[in-house]
Length: 110
Picture (cartoon, rainbow, N blue to C red):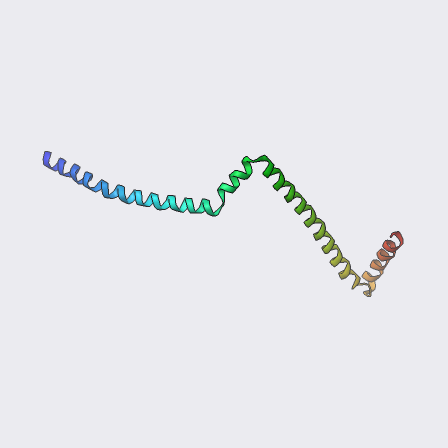
């Protein structure tokens, strides 16, 4: 029985180096994937941005200005298109009368 137990132990010991090498290779491949994804996500730039208050303030200021201008221009374009489309319906009997009154009201107050 002592020989059978030692054979089993020796078999496990001989098996471990291969398993460990395989596991280390698998972990190295996974670490390489993680490193690549961090490089692609520009994690270093993100950290620099959040650790430097001046950069963060400038970035947020520019983002706010961009959002404000985008919202204003987008609203202008959408309202212009809506006005143009509604002006096409001035000749429709029921809707046209209502829109004509709105147009007279707007022209009177402009």
